[in-house]
Length: 82
Image 1 (cartoon, rainbow, N blue to C red):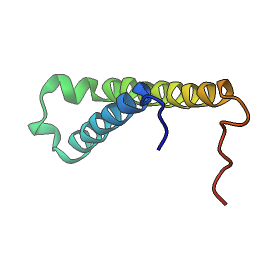
Image 2: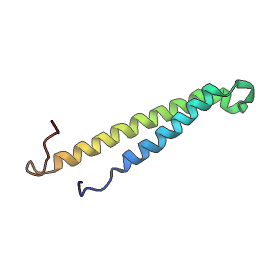
Image 3: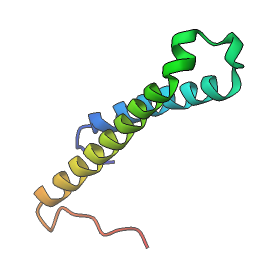
Image 4: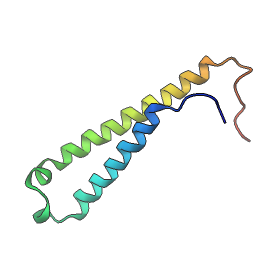
């Protein structure tokens, strides 16, 4: 196992993804008459914001991993598993 610190963007990505899935399920499975009015009217905006957060956090997580890899010397890099 690597001695590098955990990627904080990955942890946030997992949390935001779980919130996104819960929101999608609530928006899709709860009948409109049982949803709060604000959620029924603005749910698509909430979903778009959550999708944007997932995309941004995913890119940040991949970018940080790439930056950490490039910062290592070639002898420290491990070859990909075959």
